[in-house]
Image 1 (cartoon, rainbow, N blue to C red):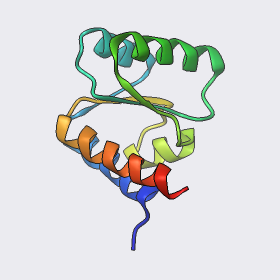
Image 2: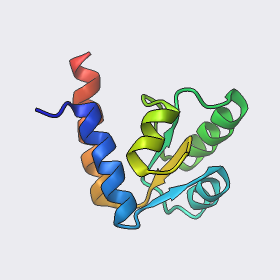
Image 3: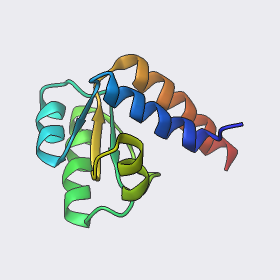
Image 4: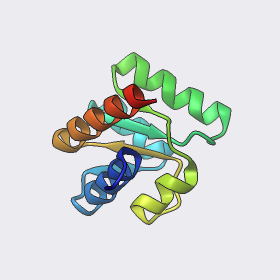
Length: 107
């Protein structure tokens, strides 16, 4: 059986193919301000100033942040080298949120 971490990464790949992801720091910041994002992934090994900037913006706009995954895992799942990605699709965000909740309860 595929574990929850892998399921989340698989969903990110699907969201990308469905055109429901935005990637890169600038694009994600703009999408947060426009209220387009449901969920933001920040790589656990991202630079501290970048991480803080995105985190603060997410907090002020009420967007959930996930930082349980490394730059390598995120990049691998979407087929692009990225440290910050945002999920625009409500369906994807809801399913990912459920899996993250399960993942955190299981630890």
